[in-house]
Length: 137
Image (cartoon, rainbow, N blue to C red; front, side):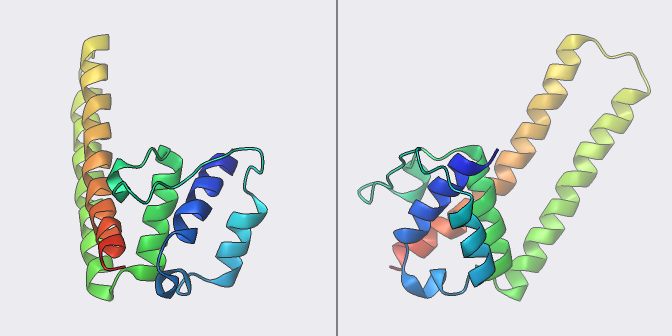
């Protein structure tokens, strides 16, 4: 299911400074490598920024996990956790308020868009930090 994403993540890591890659546990790296799609070709374009790469949402999510688990400082981890809690509460509040009344299809689409915006805002913050790691290279 995530084989292509693992291929993309591996290629991204191959193009990162070794000091960052070395912080990732060997078992996690092995899991990525063992589960890659060997028939899928993805090339990281070093002439583009991290944000300009054509990377799947699944690969972005995996990179966010790597950032959170291996690269973020304790302060950054706390900030991210607090942001996740705020985002989850806001999404819950939207669903809670709409569950009390009949919702037509258009309102459901707006709620879905809101959830997507919240996810993107959080991921953009994480990717901005990951992008900065490439600038330090």
